[in-house]
Length: 359
Image (cartoon, rainbow, N blue to C red; front, side, top):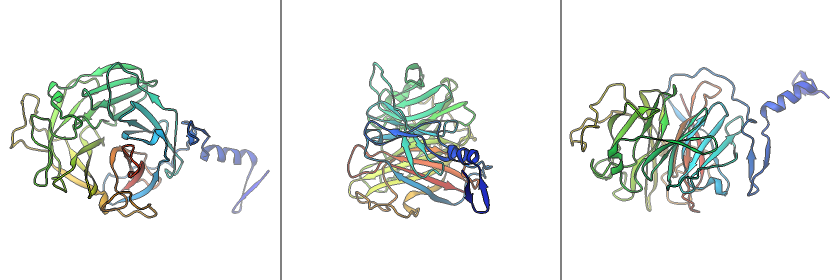
């Protein structure tokens, strides 16, 4: 059999090879939704990444189907080796693999990994490593290392004062430097000893924790969120993504009844040391905070074809984004940033994946 492609003819062998690199092997999932084989996704065309920065636009977006695996997704991590987006669910202690097509336009599910522990979990962050995962739990709070089957290997030690995190405003993030050497995390709102939640006048002040992957050599830096856009509701840090061992992307996220969501991504550098907070029982009112640079305000990003919002929002792209990850380099060399929204198991919110192109 021959297939004509313009003036070029493809042999049967070439045709089958072509199909093998672009097709997704699918099977029916437990709820009749698509289940995607993790090894079936073709890599994007290789490109040399450009310097991070510049214009930000929507590359693609995808609303996940109504499925138990779509609900309450929180932290995410992109695994370049398997072309998989790993996500955690904050109520069911599951790690959910979400696999894109070759163009990052559509996404399907792989087999869920359930963490069965003898203590309660509220998973909010995840890091993928070659032989397993590190996950952050708001309850505890704690950071755990597990194998690829979800079996506990160890607890990563945290500074004692992180136990002063406010209930349900505790550790909300986890990321690993590209060289695999450093973990980063922070809480959603200030520790109870460090100040108040964000208000319309002032942001909330957090401790960004950088430590080696084993949990040693901990270093803390003070960070202040924006003031809350509204004098009600919540505002804080939902996730972090490491560009290097010194540079972080910070997802600030808020929500207020009747006003909807806010989502902004900032960039900060830890290269200039700030006096460690470790020895301090509380952050002083005049403690220096990290300087931050706005990367994108999602309320100001245009996107076509989106359905009508299910609750009042400033822009149709907005929803409850809780996960941020640096994705694959796009074919034109731009960086990709992946966001996932937590639908909270509610019918008036979307479980949405957004891929942003930066550069």
